[in-house]
Image (cartoon, rainbow, N blue to C red; front, top):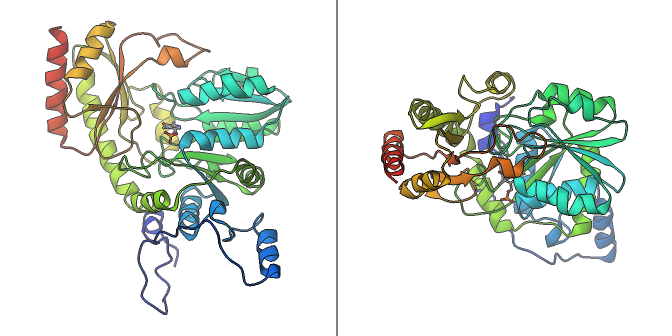
Length: 392
Ligand SMILES: *Cc1c(COP(=O)(O)O)cnc(C)c1O
């Protein structure tokens, strides 16, 4: 029987099979550093197999719990194998360090997650990797691609302003020069968009966000095709990257409800975004689910749905008023990260994270994560905060 994606999200342990003994539904936590072997020959045979097989050999190389999560993410994204990391940023760093070497040309989006930009500028560039940013909408990619481009790195929609990019065009361009395609797929969380199914080599996920979904863990993953895994898995072993079985257990627990939570986040965010757009204080709401958003058509073409993120730009560029608005919010707590059940707000400065095209990126911006609370309560909260900010 061929199972739908929704069902597969809930039956990771192949529970359809008959088991000899009753067993837990969710994989239990296996904590281990040392694993002991019967004979020297067993030890050597296991070590020989672990480069090409997902096999228990030593705690840092994975446990039954982390392997169950790897399998679930591989299935979610349509990949071949997954490498886990202690954070989403560590996954980005691990992939870039494993796949690039001095002299290589990297093209990376101007809309990249800001810490990824810092990694590129402050570490990769100084290691002799030739790093170049391209416009958040991909409009200059054809001009910037070179025969020695080894990787095109994308994030879609982009961080903070959620710019979309024609992904099929990007893949074709990268492939025309033999470059790898790496995508930070955290916005879609592996559910709303699957870059590997459209020609990418690696899909990076900050598991911290919607997959964890409860603001109680940090973790990253790189879901790879066969060729990329050879580099990424080996790089992670060289760098000693791993993740805790307790966090893997929590991520697996969050994963079961990923689809249902995302559907509700999307619905709530769209209601809030539509309401915000009609407020006199608001200049623009950035959110690809809005029909007026410049990226809406591409998002509709390539994505299965949306999430809870949106960014407000106020008509009044006063940072003081913007901060008064954020301070006045009661249900949208001030905090970094997103993807959990609760609403959050964060003052944003897109200009500081753009170098290719800064037009329209200065002003008073706030990123909201719209949570699963009642939408009427959220709108009431935004209403009172807008009024308070007006009176500062
Ligand atoms: C949060 C985030 C990351 C990093 O995840 P951490 O687990 O916080 O390191 C990477 N990419 C994007 C797009 C993110 O939003």
